[in-house]
Length: 517
Image 1 (cartoon, rainbow, N blue to C red):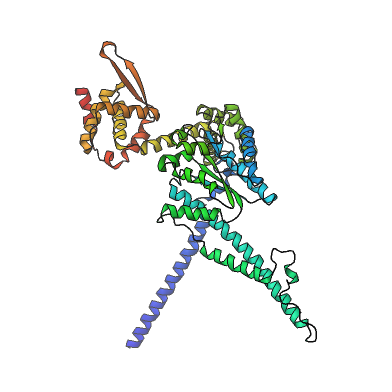
Image 2 (cartoon, rainbow, N blue to C red):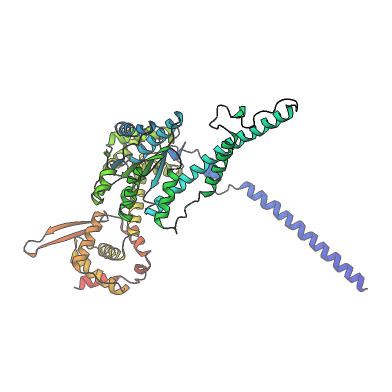
């Protein structure tokens, strides 16, 4: 009886389970059918026709095959560096110019041509690029250069070992075949004779070949990568020196943003690099420095300045017509045919020409306009996309500048925003200072003098965040009238993201106090 009950219960459970499985399977099939009918998150975006053919062409990191309006500067660089192809030491070069004037792109273009030509004529020549805005200390520069040359030396050793060990295997195979074919009745050959396989090689004997293989293996084992921290600087320099001088070659070291290196670490690195030719036995080193600051050499040791600035090349800003040519040159590769309306490139060039002829800004503007057009699923890039891109880039710049301001400058800017939001026009320094003091007390920050706050306002003016104009009040003296040059809402949002300023819960009493006074 109990068994029957148990059996019936078991059958019931099995039936329920079967129904459950059937139900689940039905739901799975149903879900699959529903998912099949719906487009995925990215399907609609992928279905739209892309505007770009190759967006990377519009990025600053891209080195074009042709650089319009920089032929004079490129030719001058080439006439200096051609000495490397003759096995001579080229003069050191300093390249000056504002941001976006084609300095780095031109230098990289010439360097690529130099390396390809050196391979064509079998002249050992290496060009190494260092961005000193990222690699900004003597230790890092020397370590990065040392490791690059160690990698190249190891590659060279591996190639030679493979070649010489293959030659040694041929010698062994030749000896074996001669021993097998020789008869005991014949006179034994002179064991000191050079094998035929070594004819037309650099080796006079098998022993010389074996010694060279062992020497290369020893060199390979001695090479050690430099860690990015932890070694004494003189040891890093010694390893770098040995790595450079391992073989005969001409080395061009390209130091981009060289002024950042000098500003952070002084001129010791440049002194060591510019003087090392007198100690090198096999190689020769030339330095190519690239800087946005025309006056950075004023801070150099006179000896470094004289040896580093043997040749100077200045890159002037582009005008609107030149920017138009550059943009057209890149756009032909970057975009699909007929993807741009006729007014897009002239407008991008005009905007960038207002910013001291910055080609990088023009390319960013064109790329951003294309991206905005794609997001709108527009078939072409229009003038309105360029204007939207201009606003977006400007806002991104403002956000980044405001975000990185010191706390005291943020408080001064926040005081100005509070006054403007409450309808105050022609704000003067005293009004800003009164609110600034209240804000400092609220977040327990040090209160600066009014004179120092005036200096901070001038700094904000130079950054383009506020507009400060000195106005004469007759017998009452002169004062600064301050107004914002940036969007209030977005700027306030960035300031409120600062943890200290974000803690201020109610700012209205501070502004009201100004009216009460």
